[in-house]
Each structure stands twice: as C-alpha cells, then as structure tokens.
Image (cartoon, rainbow, N blue to C red; front, side, top):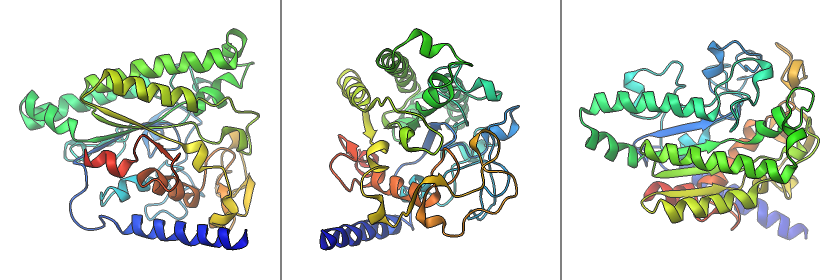
Length: 338
C-alpha cells in the first residue's frame, strides 16, 4: 500500500510538472478564453459592486504578484493553455483585452438569478451572458464583419463553473430563500439543470463551440457546509444532450467533486477540515489577519474556497485528465485542439 501511494505521488508530481511546462512559450492553444462562474473564478468583477462578497483585501492575494485583485482562486487553466497573463475581468477589460478573452465571474453568483443576493449585488449567469453579448458585439466591431467574428469566437475556449452558490447561498438558507420549501433536493437539481441547459444554448448562440462545464465542488466537505446534493449524473446527461443536439459544438464535464476527494494526503495535503486564514464575516478571511504559513498543506483557504495548491491540482487534472473519471468525454487539452 505504501509503495502504491508513493508511485501515485511520483506520477502525479510528474504530470503536474509536464502540464505546467507545456506551452510556456509561443502562442496560446486557443485565440481567446471566456470564463463564467462564481467566486472561485471572480478576479475583480465584484470589486465595483455593492456587495459583501469581495476578496480584494489582504490576506487574499498573499502569494499573487499583483496582490489581492478580488480573486480567491488561482486560474492556472489559462496558464496551461499558454496565456502569458490573467484573463481580465469584464469590469475593467478594454478593447485591446477582449480579443484574448474576458472573465465574467462574480462572487456569490449562481444559475438562479436570486442566488447570493442577500449579500448584495452579484452577477448571475444570466447577467454574465448579457455581458458576454456586449463583448461579442465589440468583437464584431473590431473584426468588422459577422463572419470573421463568428469564426473567431468558434475557436475560443469557454469555461463555466456554476451551481455551488445555488446550494450554499440559496437552498441551504431557508430563512432567506424559499427554495428548500418548494423543492426536494432532487427536484431542485432538475430545476437547476433545466435552467443551465437554456443558458448553455444561449452561450452557443453567441458563438461558443468549445465549452468546459465544471461540476459542483466538494460542498459537503467545506468547513462551512452542511450537506451535498450533487448533480454529477445530471451534468453528464446535460453534456450528452448538448453534444447530441448541437453537433457542431463540443461540451465537456469536469469532475470537480472527484478531483477534490480521494486520497488527498498522497498529494501532500494534511489539513482538510479548516481554512488557512482566520475567519471573519460570511466565512471569508478576516481582513489583514495572518494566514497559515504551510499553505500548500491546506485544502481550504477560508470557509468555502480552496487554496492555490488545491486549485493547481484541479486545473492540472482538468487540463490533462489523470484518472478516467476526471473529465468527460475528453479533457481541456483535447477540447482546445478541436
């Protein structure tokens, strides 16, 4: 058993090194990368909103060269794709930025428009799609004709990570939202998948042809969570349906839950049940407090969000599947080549 674990560690370390070295030089594998999501991907969109869901203060960004930008996540997928800088947030992106992609993610946002609103304003997936429509119209102006713009957008990568807040900041808060009074967990999952399907078709109409859908994270194992009603099976069915009906596009599923469970100790993680930073309001890091020093040994940064070390594992396995069930039906590296 010990020798098998050691082999697992060595193989995974090798995979990480190879992935991080890929495409460090040269052109990105796709011309642009558009990101839709929640606080796991928000790198500044919430900074200009009236909301408590912000991460633009220390100790967030302690290991990031630019300091706290608003992101509680390390978006190394862009790095693995060959981009030499972070994809800019929609809130501050300018015309010279948008041809390489835009990040629309908003902390506390969900598939449902009401999700996360108790903390203030956030941009739901519907709102993010409206912002993407604005970007598409700008790209149309830059490239001067619809055919060129459509052809360009068809080659880009799109990633979507939604659904966690629809549970954590909606269904699990019966005093603030009526959702759990109206739906059983199974019914609510069906409602989310149905709305998600419509939203993915809207993205398709805006030119998306290479779409990576992140599954729910390890909600039931976060320091703040109560339970998990997963939608893994529903998301795989959604991917199959989209691929069957939209034959000129390719949708893939990324198994965030599977990548976040299993033998995490074999990957060097020693602390899985508490966050690295002192916790303040709403489960986020208390401002200006000193976080743990051994950050690479922690799965969670605060009460909800994973550390950079954990995010690198997810990004690496999403880009190049390490286990057969990491991605479905292909991984991001193969999606980018289509």
